[in-house]
Image (cartoon, rainbow, N blue to C red; front, side):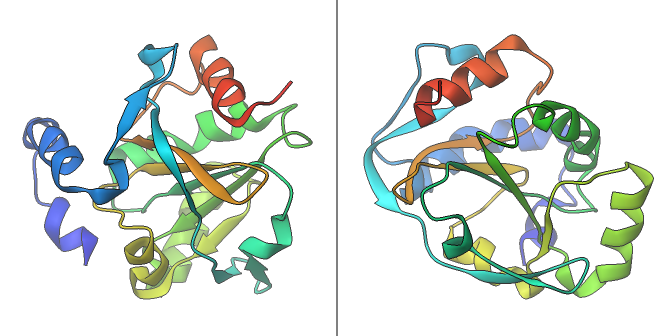
Length: 186
């Protein structure tokens, strides 16, 4: 369980682990930074197909990756027990304003067995983005998530083209320009 591995770590210890995570994660093998490296997106030199999934939303409906075929996707794994993940909820909501017609943002919560807790956090932070429940971290494991928050950038062809590990400043100008560049948005 991801929570048991990383939750007890101090923030300082987590920063020391990030290079190790990059070294051991086959997801980031052969990755390089974009022309706007200040946002920290790792571009995959060899694209790979995004693993399919179907997850329940907070309102009880099912969402499948196939529902968004032909659309660029920002898939952000997060958890209620992760302070930086919770801090990023409002900035992600603000980041999405005016962009939802160009970019689908999906946010799987990896503490899916605690649905009520996820609902409370989402309500408190007034999140309207689609929150998905990843019960038992099954999809997170499929995507080889070893740290939260982690974002996968999926292009129109359903290929993972970039990954962001860790907290980011979603209010920065680099956020949107970097996402647009890697996903080839206009």
